[in-house]
Length: 475
Image (cartoon, rainbow, N blue to C red; front, side):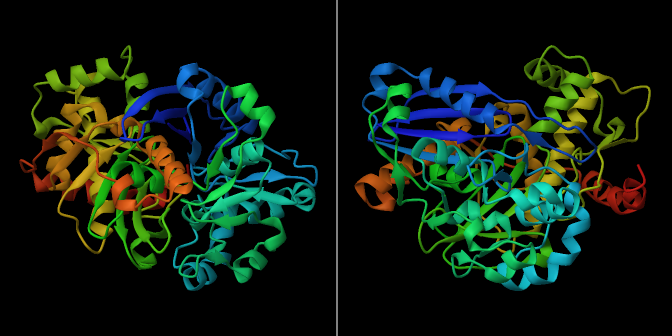
């Protein structure tokens, strides 16, 4: 048995996977996000640890006792600042935090050259530049900077370790060389002494501490390097070879394309990162609010829950020509706009529009945003596997297939993709089994074929952002 733990933004998820790749048990614990100021997004790392303990202890005790290895995945780009005693100095600054936009231009030319990626406000390095500028006392006390899942690793093993896929999203990693970049670290006033040791995702990073093993009802077992949530999701979906790709519908939305080489394309707003396996890389188009838009719209329109909102949207009979357009930029946007100040917009409202139509517009607007990201990917995949909690709606699946103009393949265990991938990485670290044997694509459950869209709606959606862009920063 293999335990995978995924530290998401809205929840911690854990799964136990058997040697055949079947998910034997799963559990989750809800997390909340704090936004004390506009563009800010923070969480308390103490809440992560409480969530992990509750999540793991909720798995069957008999299965926990059979675990042979642990893998970690988690939200990328976050900044956990520790002092010389490894005490957390401030709330963690999250991936969807936009406060460091002013620091990005100072880093952009360097980051393009040394990392192959744009300097975006969501990345970790600009966050530390912001702390240096705005919280100098905290910056002076910082001795270690860890990514979210790697802070959990410190508590589990006592080791300060990261791995290549997650480290790629810091802007401190030379992605092509798979090593820390001294130039990028110096640009933010840091050095390698502030950074964790690096391993590959399929390597052992440490052993579970005996006292933690006892508390969680687990044996003392190895903990694998693991992966950032998207790379781990790719491992879970079996997206490990060039030409394979997936769509992630979580809080954010991601189009992830695997490759065997480092292929930066910063001008397209793409991320070029290491995969969680040695000698492999990937490109990634990211929108900051995907399923999060649906959650927000369901609350806004007064539906009992997301399921009720989806049912109402599916039953709506208002024609497409009467639907408003929705810009899904509730927390800014990355690919292709790289604009942390971008805002969400409903455009084209009439008195024929009700709650159900606003939900339909939201589903379509997220799909349009994902299409923008997909069109930035240089080599189009033949199909997309779909993972993430937002992947459970058949109605939304058909909208997505139509807008993306690609077959969408829904597979078993898609909603626990990153945690499943973390468990697979644990197995690889312990057994050294062949990648092709462990990282197989899960069983196909459903395939949605594109049925065409009204291209006029997509083109009008794309016309709105440049028209409104100048107004976003003023609000």
